[in-house]
Every structure is written in structure tokens, then in C-alpha cells.
Image 1 (cartoon, rainbow, N blue to C red):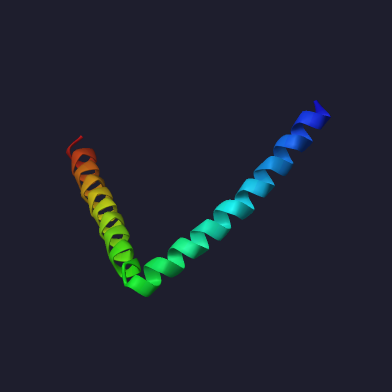
Image 2: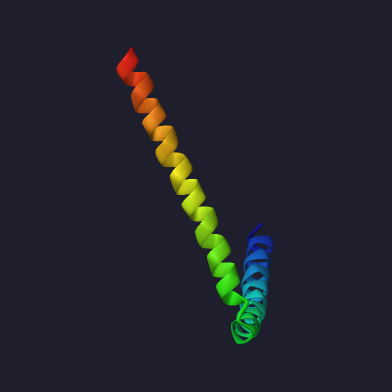
Length: 68
């Protein structure tokens, strides 16, 4: 059991280094192409939409609670 867990831990660590290098390379390429701003805009829009939806749901819940 100990050998398996240590093997899995070392495998996860090695894969994380590989993915980190690929992510930095991709981010650098997107930054040089100017596409990173599109990604940031899309993510900001998604988060703003989620936030607006949560505020809407909260107001509806308060309205329902006050009726009871």
C-alpha cells in the first residue's frame, strides 16, 4: 500500500510540472496574439452573469420569505 501511494504521489507531481510548463507556454502564446484579453473578457462575463443570477435568486427568496 505504501509503495502504491508513493508511486501515485510522484506521478501526480511529475504530471503537474508538465501541465504547468504547457500552461505557461499557451498563456505566453495567447498573450502575444492578444487573445488572452478575449479569454479574460469571456470569463468576466460568465462570472458577472453568475453573480447577477445569485443576486436575483436572493431577492426572490427574500420576497417569498416576507410573504410567509
